[in-house]
Image (cartoon, rainbow over all chains, first blue to last red; front, side, top):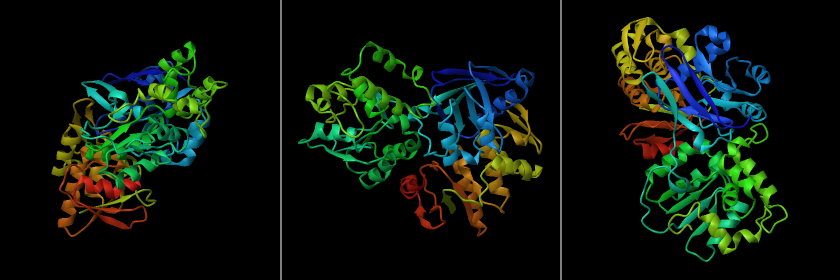
Length: 322
Length: 154
């Protein structure tokens, strides 16, 4: 499945309307906001259709994963939006992640657990906002200027450290960019390495760059730490390092511009577990045979030339990180 | 003091709504603490042991209360099991602390299972953080301390 799908569902008393943009959407937030009511509406419509008196409008089939034998049920579902309730213990299992990531469905999961095994975006975590009988999904984490998330703080002096989740091309790029400056580049190796590193260095002035496309499971604890150290820690979450390189305009032509304006319309969820994977494949393809030829393991030197790197850094620049 | 064990607890009740459906007693609903919790979290008024008035859904049964409120009532009324409080939003946190405090006055402890980083407010509070094996990692008295003790397990 690809693209954005509008779901409108309700009965005489309540009405929900929201967009589902990627393969995994997480809904959490306060109790009593209507998560179970939404799930129950999907269940009722799935069982009885229009005879349930639930009105559902969506260009894709909406189904609820209800069976304890979820694997069997999932095997029979395709090209659908699948709703998973918070009482489903299997949702945090590796087995569930493996089953989900190979399908062409989109999933709306009601869960407060971080779900580290699922590569979901920081932009696809929502809470339910209510206005009378009308309910919508609002982003849990708001993006501020140049992909900065979290509480607004005042970092009063230059950053001391740039922490990246990448240990390969991304890390090479930033290391080359800031060599000889007063900014030290450090790799956390994975996105799950960022929280423990920050905890150890919470009083240093740190600028974190990580891939927002797969940062969902880390967002809660990292942004909670940032909230408590807003004057020293800044969290920057562009889609991915490859997205930054593609956005620079240094590779690709007019078609790439169209893709970058609405990537969701081009990303087939069955093939790409997260947008980060898609942007890696796209960059590899678009840069092939040029001086910017990209691979995860090694960065072409053309990217590190000052004029070129300037174009990449324009999307994330912040104080001395530029 | 509230005892919070993180991670997968095989003997904890994960699906608290399902457990509540089969375990609750009508008199739980009309207890003063339940009435207050339902009013605060679900913005609904208890009419009787089998009827609640919701501003959105109209008259509802106790089974249509939020998962968070159901879990709170289980914590208050059923001491036989450990419950997963990741079914509760942050708006339930003060009530979890309140129930733990009441339990402490009775020289009993409240142990819960948590799988995410709940915001317990600015404190002060007393929460003993336990790792997934049940070992104590220390006592947090505010969210800064709680985050540092619990962050590795979520």
